[in-house]
Amino acid sequence: MRHYTLYIYICATLLLLFFPPQRIGAQCSIVNTAVQPGESLTYQLYFNWKFVWMKAGSAIWSTTTTTWNGKEAFQSHLLTMTSGKVDKFFMMRDTLQSIISYDMVPWYYKKAANEGNKYYVDQLWYSYPEGKTALRQEYLNRQGVKTYGQTTRPDCVYDMMSMMMRARSFDASKFKEGEKMEFPMADGHKVEDITLIYRGKRNFKMKSTGVTYRCLVFSFVEYDRKKENEIITFYISDDKNHIPVRLDLFLKFGTAKAYLSKATGLRNPSTSIIEE
Image (cartoon, rainbow, N blue to C red; front, side, top):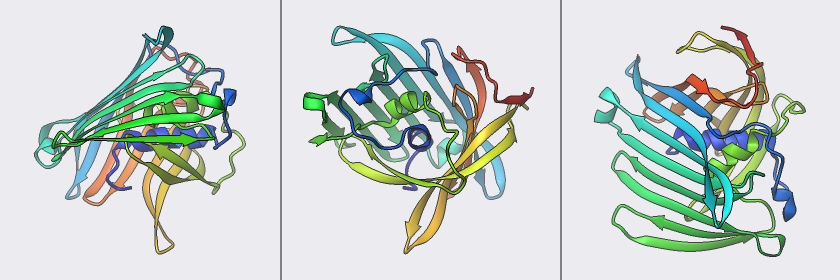
């Protein structure tokens, strides 16, 4: 899991956080209480290299409206890019797109990734025959070779972006500290299981803005011969917006952090802010 980029962890955290696995059919639709068109979230990325913290780049997550198969829907974009000195040893230019219904049912997903010396494009198309989730998957590698797949499951299936959109409308008040959860995540050619642990609540003062948030704290972990290795720690705003405000990533080649620097067009008041 250590090769994943930050938004993979964001989306999986949010889905596991507010939406445990369940059966589907019509149950895949929910009432959206968190997202609205015009929302924009900006993050500043930092990386620790040889005990020195440096600004690594930025990420912008925005939501607009579109039409898909004749129906109005949300269109969500996430752009992540490194800059400056970081580009010299690891350049990242990633674009993610998701089209999801107003009641949070995913219809389409695309990720175009340029990460170091790796380039690929993932695509997913969703349909819902007979109360099941059917996925048409496509993966394009750096050599221009496409591979295809199809997956049908009796439960709800999500990609990285639709996870983020949907999960923000759920209530996390019943989680117990130390609770563990697993969930399968799909991309253009596979489905993988991930493990999440709830660490409790904590107040956190933002490095970029000085704003203090009341947060729900979660960790992604992987296991090596039953040894638990922490991969990333999340700080999610403890309010109805449920936005990630800080991420700590523990990588093989160093430590990275992402801080929310700007949030506009939010649907709900930011009641998790303790001090500005």
